[in-house]
Length: 181
Image (cartoon, rainbow, N blue to C red; front, side, top):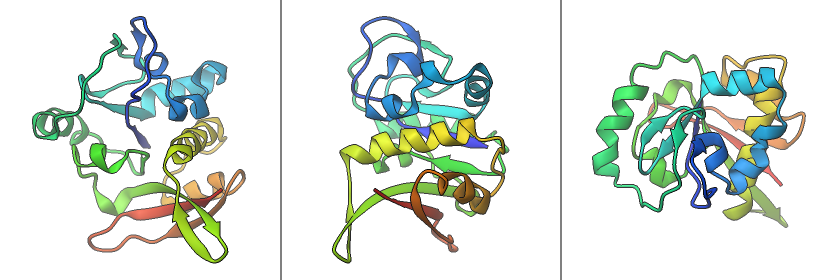
């Protein structure tokens, strides 16, 4: 399993492991510090953060706080060099579209996490709270007794906490796990 996360604009003021330097709502939803050691170990092995400054990094990579916008053209070869080597059976993509363009993950084994709300019968995209929800999804996956190996197993884990719908990928599109909050 490979879990792809974006960085956070909001950062701690001191150098430390990337997972603690990034402090935005996704990372608040993930709640790394309160995870049991086994879940943190699973996360350390499966999470890759796409950083505007450092490229594709582990949650345990020591970084300093920074203010930098991603330069996709510059980062694409660095991120691809690291992620092209990954042999995960399942990729859980929690990146925003800006960060997705740094590495096109293999669509046949990628599940993008999308968050919506329904107003009447109309599905509406949520932006700010979707980040927090993605963090909560990652937390649920790390706490699960089962390591998901395919999109259906991922849905089974996530549906314990969220109303969700799995949409099968196609030849040119990844799987989508829609969450409704």
